[in-house]
Length: 209
Image 1 (cartoon, rainbow, N blue to C red):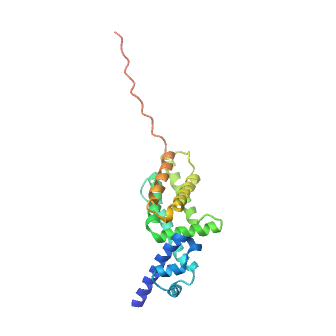
Image 2 (image 1 turned 90 degrees about the vertical axis):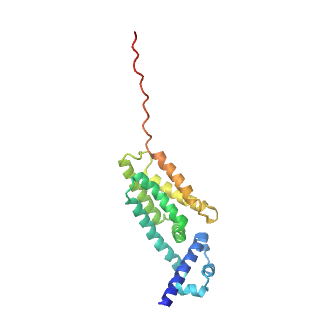
Image 3 (image 1 turned 60 degrees about the vertical axis):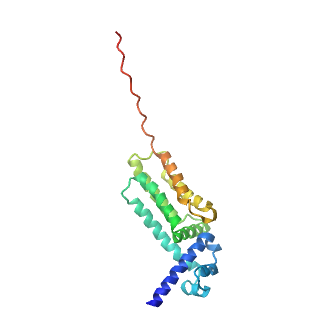
C-alpha cells in the first residue's frame, strides 16, 4: 500500500509538472528533462510512468476533453435562462482555464494537435453546438433577435477564447477571464432586442373658456 501510494503521488506530480511544461511550450517545445526536474525526479523515473511524450500528453488531453464536455453539459442543462447560460458558458470556461493548469494544458495540446492536422478541435465543435442550442432557446423566449446567427456567435466565442489565450503575455492568465467575458457579454448585449421606447405622457387637452 505504501508503494502504491508513493507511485500515485509520483504520477500526479509528473502530470502537474508536464501540464506546466505543455502550457508554456506546447507539445513540440516541451522537454521531458525539464518535466522530470520540475517533479524532482530523474528522467528514467519519468519513463517508468510514461514511456513517451505522446503518452504523457494523452494523459492530459483525455481528462481535459471529458471535463470540457461535462462543463458544457452542466451549463446547458442548468436552471438559468438561456441568455444567462450563454454568459455562464464563457465565465465557467474562463475560470477553469485560468485556475486549472491541467485543464489549460489539455486545451493547449488539443488545439495544437488539431491545428497541425488542419481540422477544428473536437472541443471547439462541442462549444459551437452548445452556443447554437442556447441561442435557439433564447430566440424562442424573445431574449435574442435574429440579427446574429448561431454559427457566427459560436465562432466568435471560439475566436475570443483562442485570441485572448494566445495573446496573453508569457501565458499569464490573471486577466484571461475578465478579457474574455467582457468581450463575449458585449457581443451578447448587441444581439439582444432593444428595450421598448418609453411613451411620453400626452398632455391633457386644454379647454378654452
